[in-house]
Image (cartoon, rainbow, N blue to C red):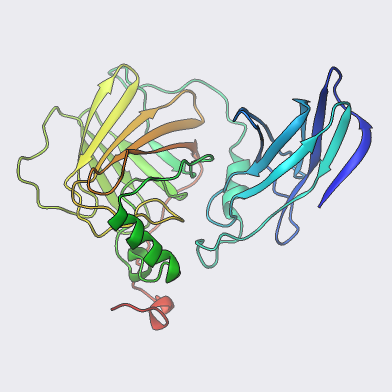
Length: 326
């Protein structure tokens, strides 16, 4: 509910938006980012404090879309269009984040707890003995806060609509099959980095991906697999990972679950601007599925006090009693 307040805002044709962000359980959603996008597409943002309170100031008078990106898997993206900001006034907007329909049963908001626990880390990015940025450690991944829609060819659009209309029944992860090979899901990942090899470890199947950094090329005749074959190269302080040889069984990008063919090609660019963050820009190409490449831009948070654990999907998997596994 929007409530126009008479409080004085910024001067010179500018106003403000203030309020509080809570979950559907009325808990403060501290650490989430609140965005205001104007009609020209310019985005202003602020991070909610420990009480979930936020204040966006110095906004030119006009119409905005107010959004809170998805955080982890518990909450869905919030978006309120056509929000009017008036000059010299503060608009009060209280935001309630609703559950994500594609979340994980049992997720209790732990993502935000971990996110806030490590939010104030400071310092430069560490480096390896050979001078490259060191990506080693445990990271909390997140989704792209402003994802662009995928443009698909007719067959892929029809397949996606079929999945949507069946409530995404039969997704591979519901049957203990491997996860999305784009590595953009909001889970913990552990990176082990050596001069010639970089390994991702994670709790979901198939539990690892290795990227060869020793200068080798992709094999000429690859047998398609769930995670494909990955090689890497350094471009100054950016590590570029190139993945091919993927089968067509996986579903891409959490919450939208796109189809693809064996022509799928994923290029991921890793940069570590500081101690706390790992920025990953992902380009997803498949000329037999997408009209143009799909991009995702995600940021992982360094969580040195956390660890990943053993997880066996088929063990005590009650979901299979109710799922269509044909």
